[in-house]
Figure 1 (tube, one colour):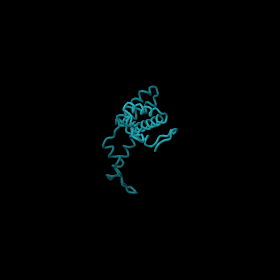
Figure 2 (cartoon, rainbow, N blue to C red):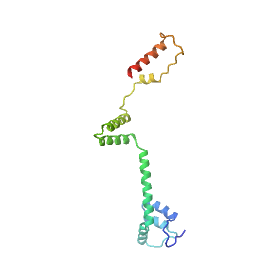
Figure 3 (cartoon, rainbow, N blue to C red):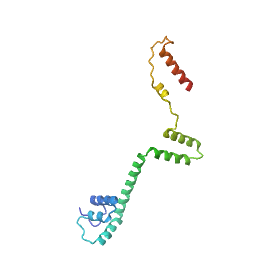
Figure 4 (tube, rainbow, N blue to C red):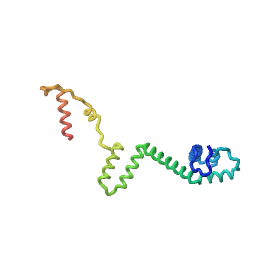
Length: 162
């Protein structure tokens, strides 16, 4: 599709070739492929024509918009793919920057401790007790059976910890 002389809109082929230029950096090839007919100019003049093409305001605007989109998507994917070490590094920087703000600093240190696994860890026995489910009869008259003794023992431990 040929453009009229005063038309400033980019064709789909030109946009495609500009994306190719952004990906490869080969401006001459992008210019050659964007032309409706193959150019017959020499290599030097092809380069000059390609540079003129890239300096047009519509092409400059398209390139800057495409680069902004590329950087935004790269930033978003980079933030989405943070590793545990990256988060720890960023938390350490934030802790250093929050000198003087004790509440914020304490919260950040607590988050860092949880992330690094330095927070209070429960023993295997404590975890087992938490997972234990006691089924007691609806009316319990027996305080001497083993099940009731175990239940009362666990309840007493929980009350002492709280």
